Image 1 (spheres, helix red, strand yellow):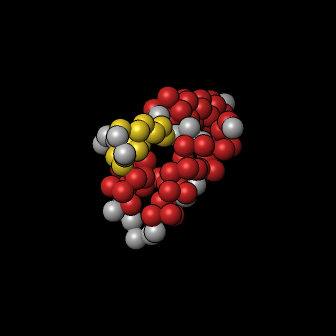
Image 2 (image 1 turned 90 degrees about the vertical axis):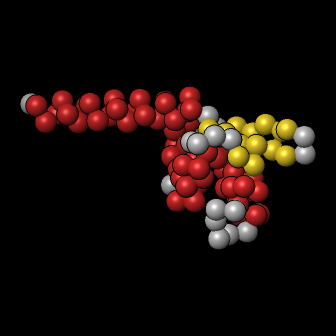
Length: 94
């Protein structure tokens, strides 16, 4: 999968909004769907893409599936961006 797959998942504004919702804690697919003017099937596909990119995890509790952020992948992305920015700052000093 890797960084390219993760960045592709982050490219969609609805998926970024879903991640923002999940930063406040786990939510069911239905609760997530309530925040968007698209079909439940569309939200389900967005959740699948985020899960495939390992940006979210799901846990079944009874008849519901709850989604939550996978912060370790987000931390890896932030580290990469910080390192990239550091290289750019070093170039400016020369």
